[in-house]
Image (cartoon, rainbow, N blue to C red; front, side, top):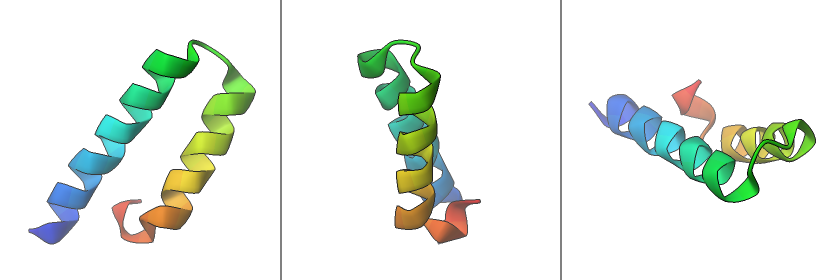
Length: 43
């Protein structure tokens, strides 16, 4: 149950990062790594 909620939050964060950062693959990779470190169970 908590895992699903975490995954949704994780996806939402990535979507927001992409929106505000535009398409910068380096920035995207960095933010994704940060989120994975933040929520290791979401992967």
